[in-house]
Image (cartoon, rainbow, N blue to C red; front, side):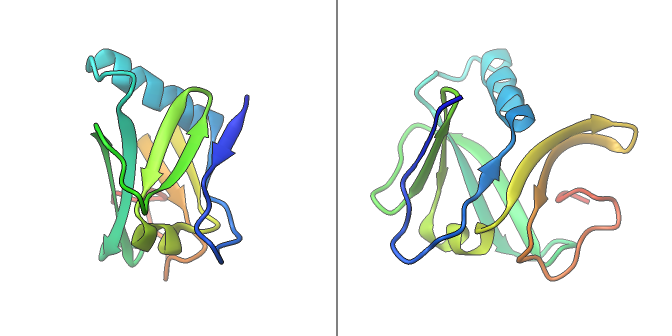
Length: 120
């Protein structure tokens, strides 16, 4: 699977999106009739059980300061401020006994959730 990224100058670490997360994003877009050209926007703000709160949503446009990740036909946009908090993060999707959802394995988080998910 080919992956392309647009990097912000001076930022050297990646945000990794797992194949499982990519497949779930595709599934959500299809089930909700979201146009193919829409981008998944990932954002971060302070708060939440890990010290960071994550947001996910589809967006028709990207901005000139967005960091863009393209993987297996999925485009993900992360604004510059959020990117700084997400460097080194792996975005995954789990579907198991403890629940179902996107998980941010973020080395920048002050602590991790007791439930193992970003949305406790």
